[in-house]
Amino acid sequence: MATNTVIAWLLDADPAIRWQVLRDLTDAPDEAVAAERARVATAGWGAQLLAQQGTDGTWAGVAFNKGWNSTMHVLTLLRLFGLDPAGSEAQQAIGLVRDHVTWRGWDWDGRWRGLVFTGNPFFAGEAEPCINGQVGASGAYFGQEITRIIDRLLAEQLPDGGWNCEAENGSTRSSFNTTICVLEALLEYELAGGNRPAVTEARRRGQEYLLERHLFKRRSTGEVIQQDRKGGAAFTSIAFPTWWHYDVLRGLDYLRRANVTPDERLADAIVLVESKRDANGRFPLETVYPGVMPVALDESAGQTSRWNTLRALRVLDWYSAHLMYK
Image (cartoon, rainbow, N blue to C red; front, side, top):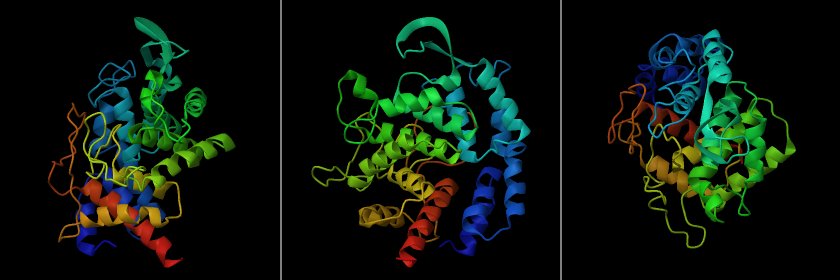
């Protein structure tokens, strides 16, 4: 539980944080939460991102890049900020993406066509499940048609329950990174009203992949995973934004949003997150992934983080609430 001092510190922030603090960590009335959420579109980081959209519907001129300022990455931020999908600002921005932004190089069958322009619509997705997971999560959140993405993700689930972008290169074992991106997409699809038993079944199998590994350990040995295979930070090091990278707090926050009933397999992950709380009740930003950010979030690696404090506190509240009623 957060102290009044921590709540006050969290509320001294951008509307993107403030409205989620009011909703998740206080007893604020729904009207106050909604009013603060509406400000995401008109003030602070959310408004800054919306203002950067080009007349062609893109951010940074592309559907995707290897920085963090492309259309895909900005939509991820707007989703995390909680931009109201029903608001006029969101509908205008998403309409431009839907009607004008396309993938260059990927055809409808998922095969690479080099630099040939194919006109594949943004919300139809492309070939890699980690990218399709991120696009699908934003598409579902903002009310877009993502059936093609969902169908492709369902077909790509591996026998161990997860997903891996390297499957096309012969990998038969899943990746934490890819799996969390796909799980978030499937969950957003369900939360948006998608009612397909196959989606629910696939998502539950995927979350079991994480749970069987206690969210940050090797299933074979129980050893803590120190670093992901693509050179990212350790899964025990918490970041924001995480982009395509997995970490233990991201895994826990997914399970919270999915309303999973905690079991003993989460105990070590919860203890790990709790251990990061400092004497003032705040949590750190341990990892910042290099790349061009489209908006400055005013947080630095090694310093306390409002984003991670919000996310950690609501995860711990979710876990504690279930323990109380066992």
